[in-house]
Length: 106
Image (cartoon, rainbow, N blue to C red; front, side, top):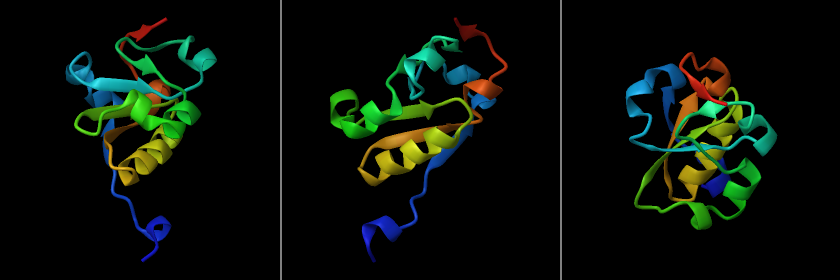
């Protein structure tokens, strides 16, 4: 089967179920800087989606696990699928920053 036709399984967690993980996992916010600057989860590192997907080896190690977040979960799911296919260990953060009820960094 052609690689692009393979179904890619991605692990997901809802943003409001990860409070106990904040500060303990590598969290990457893939929104654009202007979105990130409006507020994000306090330990999230901002790497815009295009930049991350263009050169993932510059930002990620295939031996580590990363949590990928965006505004609502759509971009993070797409990025998580692409990164999983490329051999990275990622978890999609469903719901995104827009659904997060905890305290955001501003």
